[in-house]
Image (cartoon, one colour):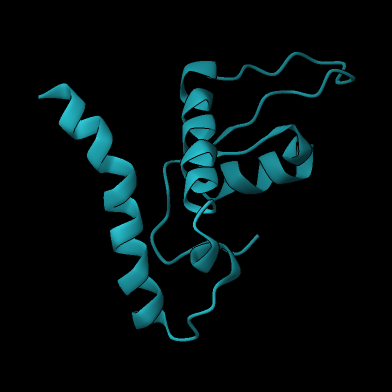
Amino acid sequence: MDLSVVTPRRLLADRGYDSDRIRENLLFRGILPVIPPRSKRTEDIPCDFRRYRDRNRIERMFNKLKQFRRIATRYDKTRKSFFALLNPAVVKLWLPSFVNRT
């Protein structure tokens, strides 16, 4: 599993990544796996479900961003132009929650 240059403290993943090999690899690198165990697993592996909830929030955020067709299909070929359109999309998603709170 290739990771970025900065080593994260935790890795949030779904049950599809629940294997002893992946867990050992992450622990060897000093990364705490936050992966719920599969239902067929014989030994009980603890999972921090409070932290696992953050994964759902991140997935919902990406789902909302993919509602913008231009972002989902990646029409813009350069990184600069893609991020130039990503910023207004994020502001459009964030603005209604900010305005309703004030």
